[in-house]
Amino acid sequence: MSELENILKEEAKKIPLPLPDGIVHKIVRYDNLLQEWNQRINLTGLNDAKERIIWLYLESLWAASHLQKMDHILDIGAGCGFPGMAIQWWHGCRLTMLESRKKKCDFLQEAI
Image (tube, rainbow, N blue to C red; front, side, top):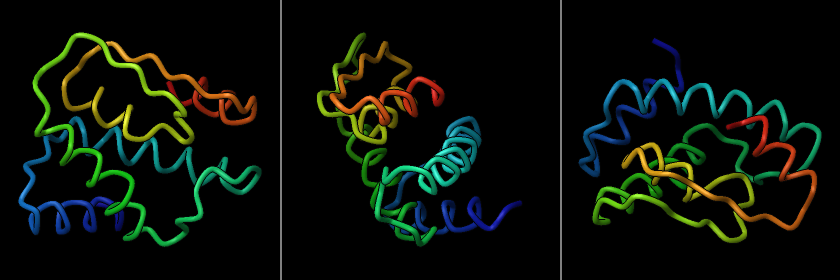
């Protein structure tokens, strides 16, 4: 198990938020891509893994867990993909992201 997975599971227990393995796998893959792109363009100022886990992933997933199931969401000003990606992971709904900055759109296109 990677360090990121360990942090994710430990921090999720504190909320508590049960994380299916499928979501954990998606977060690890997404975070690897996010860090790769963040070296080229400023997607997030959160460079510490624990801070990213808490403020990007778990905060968004916690909010998603409290929303009613939906078929489609629109994330306006998607930035680096949150909270839209987390809601989509949690509910499996259709996601449309709207972002005005081309570089961020390029990242989001690769991420999906």
